[in-house]
Length: 366
Ligand SMILES: Nc1ncnc2c1ncn2[C@@H]1O[C@H](COP(=O)(O)OP(=O)(O)O)[C@@H](O)[C@H]1O
Ligand SMILES: [Mg+2]
Image (tube, rainbow, N blue to C red; front, side):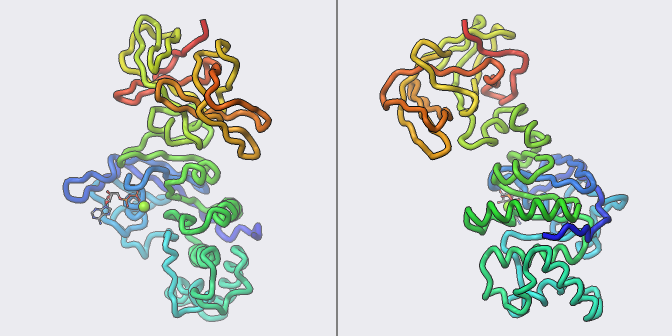
């Protein structure tokens, strides 16, 4: 895509104490977010956690129950959608079937009463940004899913909004196209410099696109940080389990007398003597399979899968299963007894009940 900065009016977006309930269901809970001018912020969470509702309140499509939304210097909390300086891209594309690509892209400018010549010029520029310049006379039904999504993007670009709002725009595309469009979107947002609030349930999409990720569960913000921060330093059990593929491995146990016991293992702990129900977590890529007796604990190889770039080893310990990423040339036999090792700083401990991270303590080899 071209590197021309067609938008130079990036504004910050501040969401303060935002709440929304449908009947007795509290869908968005005291949400606070500060999206910086030009930032790509991704709202990430499982299906039904309130992402779309939050985004629709920012767009003005859903009434705010309490709290405020400020765009640049303007409080837009109760402002009708058409006066907000935002453009929304939906999962469903929402194209007009009886209009050509050019007419779809140019529609927001037509609504603003902008003349044909100026409009055609703007349509050509926006189409170039998303590589649609040769398809302008086609109708949506004559386009692939990826091309339709580009039309929706071009229609957002042409408005030159202060903020893009995107609701799972890639989720209707097949895996390969999604990967490609992800890179294009990232490039486009960088080139345009538009403040972007992007919603997805896909943690890979969030990690790869975002400057910062806001992780939501059950309507409440769990953690806000750069992809590295939330991945390496998760605030709680939910964030730890949601970020990463394969996900973090968890062992349920208890800490008593400076020992973590669970799933048939017994490990020394530094930093805390007693904690009751505790979950020990470690990431597949932070651990390694070693000879029996040489690791933190022993377990049985349940399966080993060579994926090409690596070998995923599934380990069974007292009916708990873990995945460990090993190099592609690693070989092992199903049913063999092996050791599992990870460095103390790569073990995460959480209160099982509240999910809170236990900091300043670790399991150690003794
Ligand atoms: N208009 C509505 N009326 C009643 N309940 C709704 C409405 N819109 C969404 N919900 C409910 O609010 C919750 C959050 O929905 P949504 O914001 O769409 O979640 P997400 O986008 O994270 O999947 C869900 O339980 C959903 O069923
Ligand atoms: Mg949604």
